[in-house]
Image 1 (cartoon, rainbow, N blue to C red):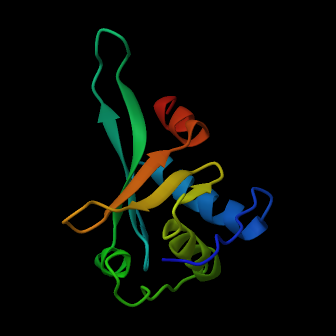
Image 2 (cartoon, rainbow, N blue to C red; image 1 turned 90 degrees about the vertical axis):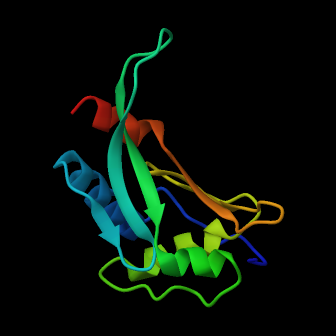
Length: 133
């Protein structure tokens, strides 16, 4: 587990470029694969009596990230967003997880007697844009 939580600022140009690339790819109806982190895609949440059907962002952690969450070595990150992705990967390990501005909350959640779960809850800004597309 990380000793201290790395800072992620909404105004960081590198972070905004990463989030913009992920969101633009999702709006184009494609998946965004981020080396070392995982794959962002979309799904449609079914309508219920209380809510309408809604398109939203989802995330599948890479094998390397899942191994890291279970105590393995850090995943290799690469590409134009490697520095920001490294900060996200490290921040996910903290007890609180990390809120990636404009994208969503990501965290590693311990599960007694099992491997930890890696979670992603899309930010309202991201899901709002997707549901209107």
